[in-house]
Image 1 (cartoon, one colour):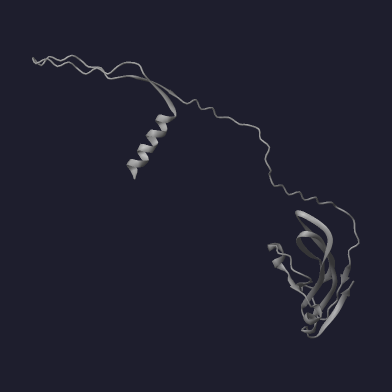
Image 2 (spheres, rainbow, N blue to C red; image 1 turned 60 degrees about the vertical axis):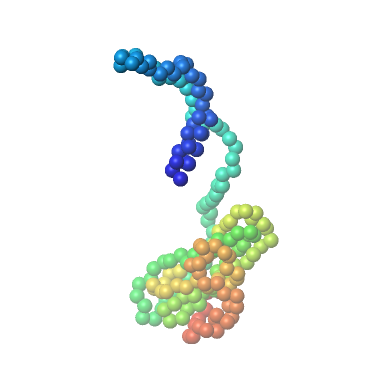
Amino acid sequence: MKKIIGLVCIALVMSNCDVQQKKEAKLPEVDVDVDTEAGQLPTFDIDWADVNVGTKTKTVKIPKVVVVMEEEEVEVPYLDVDMPNSGEKEELTLTVEAEVIDKEHTIEIEEIIATNDKLYVVSELKEKTQSLGDKKMRVSDRVILNAPDLNVKHIIKGEKPNRVFNDQYKYVQDIDAFKSGLANSKVIYKK
């Protein structure tokens, strides 16, 4: 196998260059008296292919993602929660986000349900008619909560978009079935 590769390499080298013999080969003359004259090996002038390395301007398609973040003042719901036998309160911004493709969507926090030491933030993800083409977008909503440290779980009513980003939330189709499984619950916020 190595011999075949070697022959192929020699054939490629020989086919990519121009070889011109400059002198004929001459064998040494041998006298019976064992006097010898120096011989001459052939010499070759080899013109190898010229190789120039540089750059060339060419138009190609390069994927680019443009994210525009703008600051705006908006009214955000604010909840001040006092719980019996609770310690200090802290202000938290509860944010829900979804990353979507194909069509534009909206997401809204519809209600917050309290059970023991847990808060369930219930949101709804709705598909709109406007196409996104080959782009993706993130939609979000938020509520400010001033309360003791609680365990917060996000529940999103709607079809889970097929994006890894969306794995951080639980998606359900039937929110009433989910709510029926909550014991001792109280809705503390409703939009």
